[in-house]
Structure formats: structure tokens, C-alpha cells
Image (cartoon, rainbow, N blue to C red):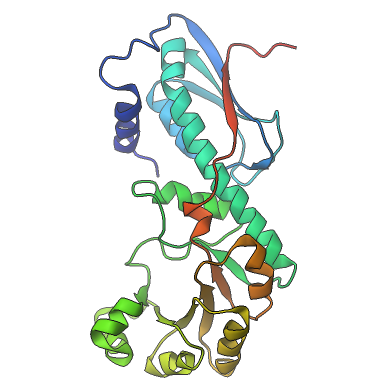
Length: 273
């Protein structure tokens, strides 16, 4: 949920303490309009901003809706001063989130050319303070959030293995985690995948491997119940090849850290013919 405290921080950053620019009298309407095609997301954040400012939100698109140039994502009405104060935040938040949703939808579509089952997932490579917005945008695009924070799943990564050793790391974290918490182990070679499962991994992350190596890792775990995940610099153009390896999950940091914002425009006043 978007809290008042978050909105206050955003407004303090953008509006400041002596806002002259937006001190415009009267009442007006405002429309958030797409300038390019994509997938809508982040509208709950824009709604929270305008409602905090006392502006009526008249209409919003559903998250995940496809949009084309000229489509209206959101319509508001209220005091002109407050509409203008929320304008830039709405454009930035929705544009950023919709860019993530659009990139995620592209990745999902690429994966579906090879597999109907593989999941496209995000990572923890998110913008501090905006993880909730960005993860919801991934879902709007048809992707999976992966773990929302470190408490959702134990991930034994390369630095844990370097400090503790693979088996000791899994054992140590298994003792401390809830019975309901899954353990994922990152491996950098296909031959280490069975070793991770033997140590107690529920999920094996095949990290920075080629599609051929990923396929080998998946095949080595075919007789186990472990899920497999491919990750490590996988681009949109490479998704089909990885999807064809039989892996269960493809996680992509680029969904959140490299998605360009969708081009949007905010227009005040009544729409003219």
C-alpha cells in the first residue's frame, strides 16, 4: 500500500517549502495520457498522490491494461493548485511503473514462443523506496515478483558459499528459518546443481550460465522435486533460448533497473475536439 508518509516524502522532494510555480487559482480537470503504446501500471500511486492533495480521482485504468498513444490512463478534478502539484509525481510514477510493466510483458511474450510454463520474475535490483511500486508493475506485466525481501526466501548466494561453504550455509540457514520458508541455492556450474539439492535446496539458481549449460543443469535435476531458475544478465532477445531449456523460472534484473519510462503527458482543462 502507498502510505501518506511516502506521498509526503515525494511531495516534499518535488514541491518543497515555498512553491510559487503551482499557485494558480480556480478549479480544473487533469488527464494522464499515453504518448506511446505499452502496459499501464503505477496508477494506484498516482491515485494516492492526488487523493492526499484532496483531488477527486474520477477514472483510472486497471493495472495491466494495454495502452496506445492517446489513451487516457487517469482523470482527476479539483483545485488547480493541487492538481498541478500532483502532476509531475503522477507522470513520473506511472511512467516508471508502466515502463517496467511494458518490458515485463515483452519478456513474457518472448518466453511464450518456447514455453507456456516458464515464469518471468523480477529480482531485488529495485530502486530503494520504490520496490513495492516496481514489483507491482512486474505483476501488471504478467511477471512474478520473486521474493519481496530477504524474509520471503533464504537465498544462499556466492558470498554465503565463500564465507561458510555450500553445505554449511544451507544447514545454518535451515536451522534458523521457518519450516514454511524455502531455500534457494545459487550455483555457477551445472555439476553443482545436484550438490545443492543434496544439501537441502528447494530451488537451484543456475547463475550466469549459457543456455546449453542451463539445459544441462535442468537435466541433472530432472529426477528431483527442486525448481530451477536461470539468472544473470539475460536480455529480452535471449529469453526464448533460455525458456526452451526447461527451466522453471527466468529472473531478470533488467525488468526493474533498465526499463525505460513510458512516455506520458498530463494535460489540464477540458479536452477539446
